[in-house]
Amino acid sequence: MTSPLLSLSGISKSYGQIKANQEIDLTVAENSIHAILGENGAGKSTLMKLIYGVEQPDGGTAAWLGQPLSLASPAEARRQGIGMVFQHFSLFETLTVVENIQLVVPGRKAELTERIRTLGRDFGLEVDPLAHVHALSVGERQRVEIIRCLMTNPKLLILDEPTSVLPPQLVDKLFETLRRLRDGGVSILFISHKLEEIRAICDRATILRGGRVTGHVDPREHDAHDLARMMIGRDMPEPMPAVEMSGGDKQLEIIGLDYTPDDPFAVPLFNISLSVRAGEILGIAGISGNGQSELAGLISGETVLGRENRDRIFMMGKDVGLLDPAARRALGFAFVPEDRLGRGAVPEMSLVLNSLLTAHPLKLVKRGLVDKARATAFTNDCITQYDVRASGPQAEAGSLSGGNLQKFIVGREIMLAPKLLFVAQPTWGVDIGAASAIRQRLISLRNEGMALLVISEELEELFELSDNIQVLHHGTLSEPLVTRGTRPEEIGRYMIGAQPKKASA
Image: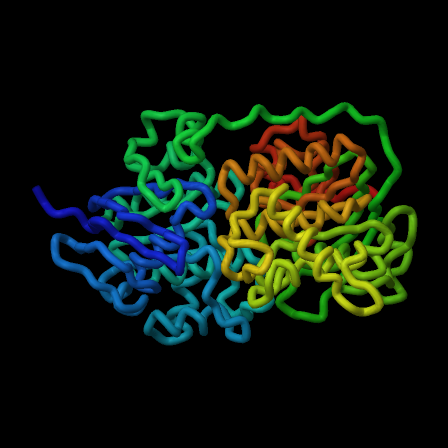
């Protein structure tokens, strides 16, 4: 028998008292697509960092094609033939896409630019090679990471949530490409919280729980319910139904908004119209980079309209076009941005101090001084209520896994008891158990009469959450579609511009 591509035996890694990986055994065969399943905090990211040379194990052994493997750095891993796309991206924001790729992939700029465009078309991961990274959305940055990995011609490709930025039509196209890569000799470690995708694309799965391997299975022989139970150690709760609501007050209304950004790489918006009532969840679908970031900035107040555009955005019945974020929050608005490490939280600050960023009006600050007892109590309540896996309220935000930090930020904003809650990518990188809990909480808030606007690239999520869906494509918003009377394929056609329609004012 030939040796496996990669084999790990007894791999362990601890950070102080936290045992992230405990005696991990993993075998990745050649020409295979191998899933790594587990909740947030199960040890998936740590294990991938060990394989990619970002971290070194405390114990255990690794082999590559039967030969001892010791990776001291990502550069060494790439030389061996290992590529990885991180959950939190490693791009220089002041450089262009092609300049970032030139740091890893040799070649002339013109040649690399054409290769980027070709791979983008082949994978359905189009991105402008000449755009600066700071002007890209989170989803577009993920595309750059994937393309950069593919351009190193890896033998083992580690993909973390690669389909989260794609509509259904392009997921199928990506899977076709991954199968071609597999058949051409590339093995893939595939991390996803979409269990039906795991069953569709993967021929093997390793399940982690609490830093340990709890099973190796063929995911095609188990349904999604079984896989979820293996991951979290319990049955998933039944989804909470949305309560039939009568039309409440309009808590957000945008009327015929046109916006031309100063940034030449940003997306202009054309005749944007939408409304969200109390007791309603409106979902905004669309492929990343079609104006979501620009729309989010205008709604949150981070981008302030000029006086010529007054009377275009209303919250709780008031014209807020010229109001800054703090003034909008004072009216009862709360916001969860898509970029959790940068806009949602400050990585180097403790969770207590991150609570103060938006929750300070809840008597956490008195006469300009922080009430440490109240701030700590608020943070502890958030950690407990939203099952945030952290060492405590003094833990640095950057020490949390992506999913746990997302739970903290979502919980912090919900605890403000807003009238209007705007959530961008509510479950980005969050495991199935935590994602279900967040979605059920949003539905519960809707049932209690809150107005919610949700931007998501997860169609399954929007269909679970939303009463109505509008699709953003090239800066134009579709007409509202009643969710229960719409199929995902129809939304997908809007996402790729096959049915462009503007919402009526």
